[in-house]
Length: 152
Image (cartoon, one colour):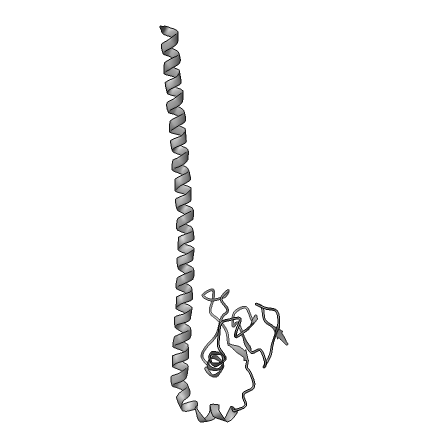
């Protein structure tokens, strides 16, 4: 059995999960913030390939693998397949929106970090320049005072 790379417990029908199409690690749906319904939509949609947060955006993925919970009403899926396309599109849109929101939040955080670090470097640079200027000014003043006292 596969172990969840997030919580290290088994991925099975009681604790369903999916495999990252890039790094091949298994992750529980709950650990990946996916509902059972979202897992089912991902499983039923042949053209969807899922990647874990670590791998998102790195390279082109391969095929999705899933372990899903046992459903008591398996016939329901067959009866609802005509509505599945609409549901699938809605779920994919929700997933897309969640991914976009997460990416935006992470990019914003990274940009803020870079800006903060650059501002810190600039501040330190100018602080050092001011210190150098003050030191030079003090040395010049002391030199002028010393020269003024010895010549008088």
